[in-house]
Length: 531
Image (cartoon, rainbow, N blue to C red):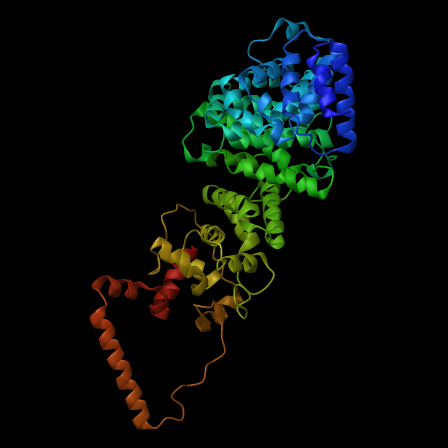
């Protein structure tokens, strides 16, 4: 149907004429696709929505709104305060509902779905939506997460709207987190979506599948995964700065409860490998926002048959994080966005939890046996991460170095042992540790990790490259005595010039450099730090 003819029928104000015109318009746009550029039609439809309409005419108007809202040229009629208030009322998320909405007109489920979808597609609504307090209406409906009245579509677009508002508005983010108790609210929503039960206070299982090992659980359905990922994204927005501040006991209990649910997400599968990885990616992002002491929930489940046990602790979740990180590392695509969340999470977990650090060290930095190849050469996880220490992206380089440094208990000599001085120099210089020693971290004692192969080759290892190198030919071989004397005097002259230009602080640093210490002193330091 011609657009002008549709507008002409709408301008008559008659519902029957408008219904026929809108149904034809909607059908034609659905068939041919593309944009329609009908801004004036949007104004007329919004005007119709303020009237008392027949259910069929109301649905036609709402579908037209949904179609028009896809076209950026047609958005203006829908982002006014009055239009937003009307759409929010039909969506059931207005803070003050009209009598018509309260009466529950026929087809209200579809009406709310269409309105929520319209609002969620429009990125220009955030200021008006915040003014209308739409987040309160959404939060109120989210409380009824087990109510079968709400279809998947309504729940999904409620969550999508909530995500957009929290992503675009800092004030809405704070309001949801504090006034509306968003962590608890969304945690309950995630709990209900995944169908969880709680055998122990911080241990989850799926209803009807208690005692089934994680690897044997059926994959989550498409709808469960879609809803769960929206919830995870909202929680990420709400908790964005949480790990940078202290939390009280009540907040810590909420975050531990949420962390237990996230552990279940990490151990669950979706339909298809690609969707599973996306689901795990959102989970890892959110885990990185939790207060560090609350990450102990990853280690709390009892050790069961088939679990990965280390020091009497269940390491299934930590091992899953390590595998996830290595997959992202092997892919090598956009490492800053894809790798760093999981690598940072592992680093901070290792820093604060002794069992996690020792487990990761056993996987990433096992006792050193290969002293013939450089630390960056090879396909072990250590080789891959050491290669990142010279990555062109500074954030990637620093994060990789920090991870290995923490696994070495921030011991300079141990760090150099596993990475080579050349790879380690960047982090050591940034920390002011080029002269050796240990950073300020608090770590437990470890057992001696030196292998027989390493002990035998230790005296011949080049600390800069980290490997045993072939003996180099004597540069003075074949020289006459006069040439040797000339080169010696030249070297003395260079040392004199250097000593005049160096400060006392430079000399002190040089005397403490681990590469320039006597062999006996280096051995003693190494043995002390390995204890």
